[in-house]
Image (cartoon, rainbow, N blue to C red; front, side, top):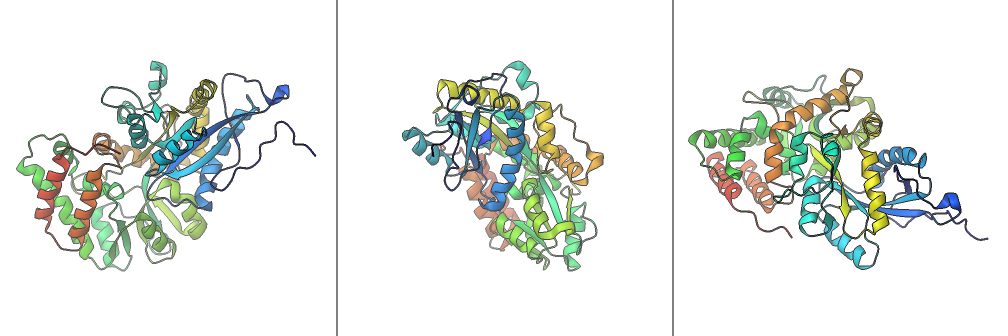
Amino acid sequence: MGLHPCFIPRAGQGWLRALALSSSVVLSGCAAGGLPSVVYLAGGTNSDETIDAELLDDFGGRLRLLEQGFRQINSNTRFQFSFYPENQIEAAVRRRSLGGLGPDLLFVNGDTALRLMQHRLVEPYPATAAQLNLFDPEAVKRLRAPNGQLAGLPVLIKAQLTCFNRTAVQAAPTTLNELLANSARGKPSGLSIDLYNLFWTAGSQGAIPAVNRALLRQPITEQDRRDIERWLSWLQNASKQQGVSFYGTQQAVEADFMAGRLAWIPCRSTTLLRLRRHLGPSLGVSALPDGRYGQASPVNRLRVLALSTSSSAMGRKRALAFTKFAVNPLVQRDLTMGAQTVLPANRFVKVPVTSSTVLAAMVKAGEQGSQINEMVSMLHSNDPRIQTNEHLITQLVFGEITPGEATEQMIKVLQAKPAPQR
């Protein structure tokens, strides 16, 4: 028996089911009895995410919301979606492009989109003034190359939060002192030396302005040194507490939390579905604790849609239509309100914080994270200075160097001109 001309077989391992593309342009295809148009979208996952069935289910649920809206307009277009670790996505895109199967769109972190544009795998996004007005100017700034070109269009924000076990901790600590006090009372906490997951403590210790000055290679004052040393001293002091454990990866932190060996951890909003499955109603969510010297400074991941250079003219047309659809206020609201694991990039979408403590925590995380936007625009997650400073933090928490020594070394690393990105 022959296949229907609009039948799309499921792709091989690593691909989600076909997804629909929304567009203001109605394209010919299945409605006329022809083959459907397929748009390929490659998604990147962070180093602190494991590509497994749970992650695919989380992404799939979010993308199905886009599919439902799309099929009301263009039922003939399909998406095929694949995942790659973001540190491997460049090689994957090049390999697929050589075989004529390169993606039309990429759904990646903003700094990854910038790197791919630098390496000519992403086209500068031709955003209009009206489109750019939808987003926070600081978010747009994070996506601009030095020559002013835009690497992609913001779609979602992954917030960094507090996750705690309600059976062990009745309420989340709101300050760093409360966090250490809880740990001392037998409520163990876990932290990762992954710097992007640890930078939130720099804001709580008032060190972000000093870090920014080092990155800008401005003169470092004695006050700047004291601010960075205070931050690093807190980290070393926390590592000496019996109830605080430092881990090499965020995945290890989450594994011990789900196993009940930790009562409190920092977490990404996109891990909430996984954590809920394991902890159920025992999972508590709140904003990260502030400190005596300032608010917490979570690095909230900005996810963007970027245009691949391997796309055909028709594929580019569909990709642009899809990005326009994805930032529509109604679509953004549905994405936010569905699983409640992301924030909308469209700043005109109002999040009903009174209806959910999780949404309220994510909005608070967005406010806290605004102070670190400048730093994130200068120090991307793939910057080699990140890895160097993670080694420095490891030495610090194991007591191999003093906070003063670590301060001087960190300043030198931050002031160094980063090596060209590969």
